[in-house]
Length: 115
Image (cartoon, rainbow, N blue to C red; front, side, top):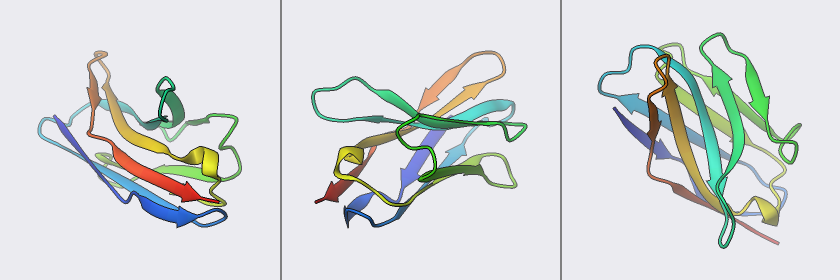
């Protein structure tokens, strides 16, 4: 399984970006897909996840600003990020977990929010 993320970039505070991630390969039974981020000098942290049944979970720091969604084919996941803040600056990683617990990570995409 390969996860390909896109959509990162540089934006001013208050702006918006949309991240997309597509899984390819053997993609059946991808139970949970989501996004994590890692800022310089910090540990990787959860941003948002969405289950096959569309149940979502968000970090408190992004609630009300970010929205996660899955594509109809269930092998894609998007993250709409609004009202971005400088503290959202990080490398964002796409993640997918299969029903059997197998865990996959994509290469990160850089999001930089200038003040």
